[in-house]
Length: 134
Image 1 (cartoon, rainbow, N blue to C red):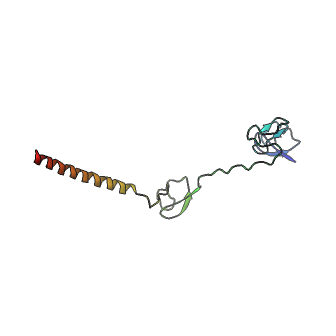
Image 2 (cartoon, helix red, strand yellow):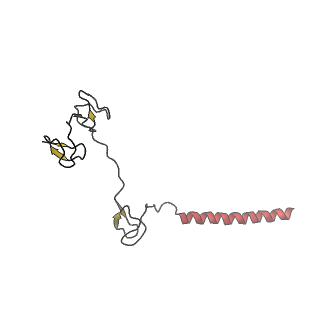
Image 3 (cartoon, rainbow, N blue to C red):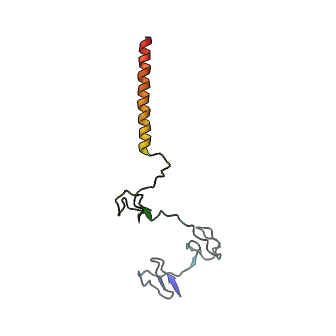
């Protein structure tokens, strides 16, 4: 039978007094929560850390969503590690994928500039009308 070293996590024989991997002194196991592995005082009926009833089967640990480890180049479609900034195949910048349904920054800038030009034209017309009636 084996037990786990509380310092390094190595699996070692139960009768060993020191860990064969890290040399830590092996303490008697004692009572541990089956769900979160916290050491508990003898006679504890519920875990003080997570609330699990001692003697019950452990609760499944929640799955943690992680970021994708791969990205796809928008130009050549090659799969590359997600932490790269440029595709190793074609050199295209790798970044968040933007939906083509959304408006592009260039399009927004173009619309704003057109509105400015139209606004200036309207201001010139209004100014010339005011000069006529003065």
